[in-house]
Length: 198
Ligand SMILES: [Zn+2]
Ligand SMILES: [Zn+2]
Image (tube, rainbow, N blue to C red):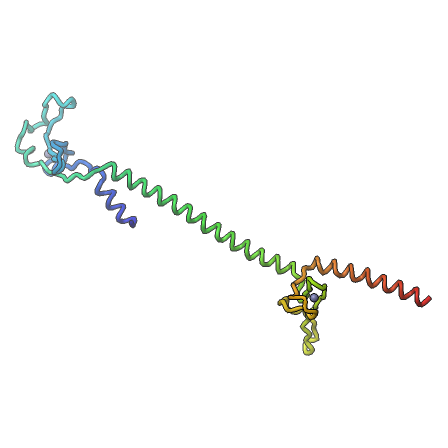
């Protein structure tokens, strides 16, 4: 339901202000209320207690002025309808608050996913693939003769040449551990080579 419809309903079911007398301009009082509507009339009475039957100058009980002033106003006013409209508006407000929260949560989750992808790509050593079976390490480089540069190749998986299965990307940490183990091995080899020379 659009806002315009709701406003129209609100107007229709709200209590209407008492009309003014078309002869003298004073606010009229309810004479009769029923299914057909509310009958308003300009009685000309000025008594406050409703029992005194005092009339303004030139006015009298059931005079011509009164008869001519009477109007019937359609009355559909219904506080239940207004209460329902209030409730509906509250619910709509609630829904838009939740919708906003969901949108924000989605944005946050997109951001996290992107950050996560960035982090995991930063963790992978580019162009280095390792076989989990035999420990074979493949280092892929892109060598550009024209530019005179060597850059790391991609980290796309490919089969181990020893037939163990696929090679997997290696993290910088794994690479560092591998280098340490390799250098320890080289040191041992160097020392045993020196002994043979002596
Ligand atoms: Zn009047
Ligand atoms: Zn292998």
